[in-house]
Length: 168
Length: 246
Image (cartoon, rainbow over all chains, first blue to last red; front, side, top):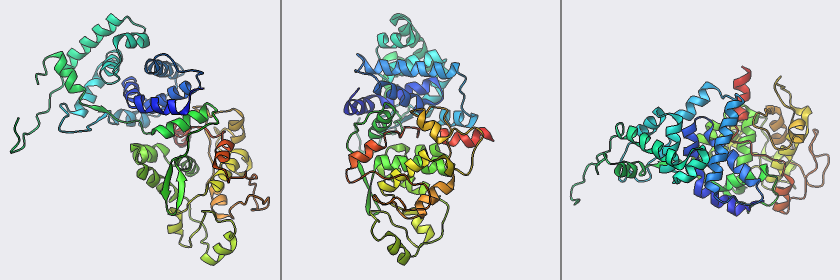
């Protein structure tokens, strides 16, 4: 059984990123993260790559829910979609609008969105992503570049006002 | 920065931080631990509240179960108020939930001192209904009793939904399943909140079925005795009952 401290450490390390990845797939994202950790807690030993394992477990969970036709109410679904995906830890350093990026991501196909989120915010390599998506690393990479190009046309950088007395 | 290069766009996008998951690390470990049937849990973190000490798990339990009892939206409270992972908000959310417990006949301080003279141990009832509803420091003895009572005694639920899974069935089926639906009437908690606090040695502490309490002098034993508690709090099945049957 996996030690509670290990579990806590993994949660601290990955929960936020996993939640974002789950959001890229759609509804019940918080539940999916929790389910993945519960599954991890049931393992006898730590997987070799816990992050990739958790992402894959979440993805399988989503597929299972989808197949089983377990749908939440429209309101809950909408609430989940409307929830903010990002926050600005330091506004002065944030260079894009969080809501705009969220919206742009939602306009991508699910496959394109997941590869962007997994690589950019979950810091997963294309090999790890390929393990999750059952594609080759090169296919994942091509998908990533194509999706990034789509975002490039939509996302505008924020111009922060320069404060008086500050030198650039 | 030139947003036209892939590198700069990547760098800009990475300035955004993913929103945190509403559960903090300890909550998550508790939830996973219970689901996995682990008996060994980390030391409780304590949250000072109103002259007593609640463990985070107590807060989770209270928020989840009281909300289930009241039939109000758990996710609304939990995600909205406590969802930021701040302990103060968590406690505030719990207090808010408890403040919605239906009012009961006021107990005067004199009655209170008579009734609870020997067994208060953190449990107190004030004579101002509005006040006491927000200031009930549920002792873990009480909480344990409530949980056991709720899970073990089907007969106390006065309102049965056609879709409702009996609490016994839930208990016997092991960890709660995603689609498990359970419901506890407001009478359940009223019975507990407004009756005499259970004592360790008494079997006649009230006129309803209170299971015998474990010796809770050792908090670990209390933790272990509640291993059937499962992490349903984020499953939101407590609020779906209302939505789905209507």
